[in-house]
Length: 310
Ligand code: JFZ
Image (cartoon, rainbow, N blue to C red):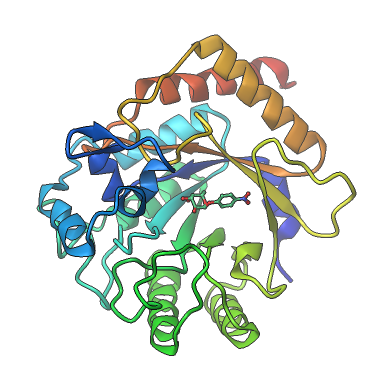
C-alpha cells in the first residue's frame, strides 16, 4: 500500500523545468517565440531535431547549485522537489545508458545534474521526484517523428521508456513521485510501466497521466479544483507566470506582491480541499534561479511561517 496520506500531507512541493530549452529561454534566431510554452520551443519554433541537439554543446549550467535550490524549497515551505528528468525534447538531465542525448555525454558540463539534486534533497531532508515525458522528439523510433503531444507509443519507444524508467528508479535513491506526461499508451503499456515503477519503488506515487486508469494521484491544472470529493489523491501543478514552465527571458514579470498573493491564494484553495500544490520554477540555461521566482517563493514561505502555529 502506497503512503498516499504522507504524500497528501506534503501539501506543497517544488516543480522544476530545467533542460536544453532553458538555453533558448523562449528565443529562436533572435526572435521571441510567443506561441506555446517555452520548454516546447523545439516544436513551436519548428527547430529540426539535429539543430536543436547541437545546443547541448553550449549547455554548461555552472551557476546551478542543488544545495541552494533545496534550501530555497525549504524556505518556501515545500516538502519535495519534482525535477524534469526528460521533457518532450528527449534530452535527459541525468546519465542515461540508452541515449547519448544526455547531460553527461552531450554537454561540456558533463555531470549527472539530476543525481546531484537527488543527493541534495536527501541531505536536506526533503523528497525527490521526477517528471518524465512519454513522448520524445529526439528518439528515432518515436511515432512517426513525434510531433504531437498525444502520439501512440511504438513498441520500440515503449521498450526505450521502460529501460529509462528502470534506470531512473534504480540509480537515484528513493523517488517520492513520478509525473508521467503525455503520450497515448495502450492499457498493456500503461500497466507495464505502472508495475515496473511499483516493483522498483513501491512507495513512489504515480501520476494519472500514465493513462488507462493506472493512477495513484490525479493532476489538475492551475485554478482547477475538483468540485466533488475525489476518491484519489490529487495535485494542482502551477507555474509562476502561467504561460510557460521552462525559462522565458522576455517574460513580463509584473508586480511581486500581487504574484505572491495569487500563489498564496491558490495554495490555500488547493490544500484546504485536500490537494497537493506543485509550484514551478524555470532556471536559466546557466543554472541560475530567476530572482523574481525566488522572491515569490520566499514570500510564500514567509507567509506560511507567519501563519502557522509553533
Ligand atoms: C505538460 C507539458 O506538455 C508542459 O510542457 C509542462 O511540462 C506541463 C507541466 O505538463 O502540460 C500539461 C500537463 C497537464 C495539464 C496541462 C498541461 N493539466 O493537467 O491540465
